[in-house]
Length: 597
Image (cartoon, rainbow, N blue to C red; front, side, top):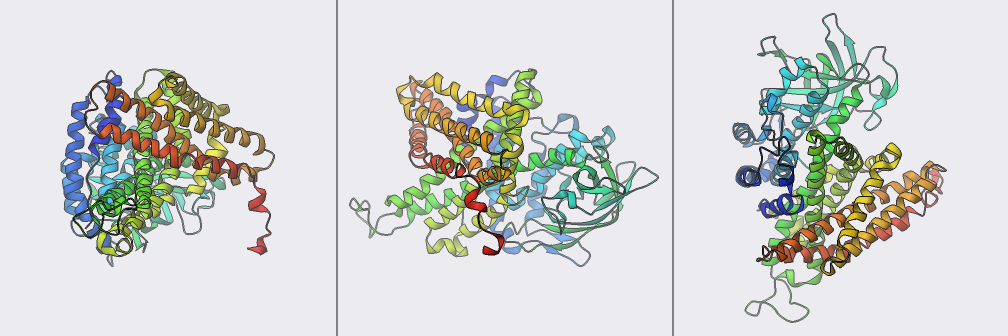
């Protein structure tokens, strides 16, 4: 049976030594969250994830959700009780606004909780993850009355939320959507249409589900300019806040999926359902993107989470499984064979995943910290930089972390050999669950196009130029430190390659837009590698500082530095391949006529 242990030591290292979040103790949220309190929160969160959620992961995969004749849905055995415990312990309120019952802790703390939840039970975590996206959309764009009606119960977990975009005939191209909204005399709208692939669209965990639905008001402009966003509760809410009758929305089907079986991915049929406009007429995408950006960061974290739990099980198996002898002579002299971890190729697979997990986690935490500063910093320049970085880096977090997360889950499955392919050890579930993260909340190819086509050029390239300058500043600050030499040389090389790729795009994309499309995948991957190289440089500095101060008495910091050196030697060279492919342009992709395929 698979197991999971929350990487609490990694969280402490990142929060204390790398990000040094105690520097922000004068800011809202951080002031109420000293490091010792954060540590207590994460320790308790780890217990819940390890003892309650993780044992249900395989149960949920096996049983899935059941739709009944009336359209209601039952979640797998144990899920309802686990959700009750989650709500009673206050976990849904961790980083939400205290004005609506939240605890107001920094988002970077909630990120650690989110990783633990997803590693322990990705499908279960999705019920709350989408709710937080609905909370953010209403918190940002809702009226005061809407906030008072919906946010307290979304924050507490008494209600959950969804996002409804996709229709049978359109996914990414939302301008084609057909769901219609008819205005009523009382200011409400009647929503009619069908939405598909709606995660957590119907279930028995909460007493109400608040759907956020994209629809087109009658007479609105065609295309994306005519899309509005509506709040459509599963159960209507009376003037006194009590629940009334069922609204006109029902689960028509649960999708049969490759993975995340325990999450009810629904076809939702809207038949004259009562909806409430949020964010203004024809401003739906603006409001929905608030929700989607939150969701995209959470999905990136799902890639990391499956990589982490798969790694933990693969490493344990590699240390236990006896097979063959070391190429340099037997190591397990008293046994019939050596543990497979002695073999270089097994080490390669484990180090590939370990070096990703640690730097990807740092990258996600670093990004989340900028999200906190965007909300609470009194400095206009700090908020501007944080806003730029969040826009620039969101597609990278979403796509790079999920591509690598899936690849790493399969590497860890490979460590098990044939035992990884059968269900007994649970490795196939990590692979199957991880696969969806590359697809939903905007397929990864779309994320790459968004990065190249929109984010790079925004504000005259201000965000990218600031990011490159920041890398240069780290190089200059530590290039005289002999112990930092490999990390600084690696960062300098990665930064130069990222800059060269951006310059190539600036010179070639406008003359032929296909050049931008053809380069987008490799540019995003190059960006991801450069960003993780940056994270390894700052982590190496933190680890060396700890060792030099006498805090490096155990093996943690030595292992950190050794893992970083592996990344520089074996992963960073891939950046050069991405740069070369990017610069080949669109011709190799576009030369064949359609009929040749």
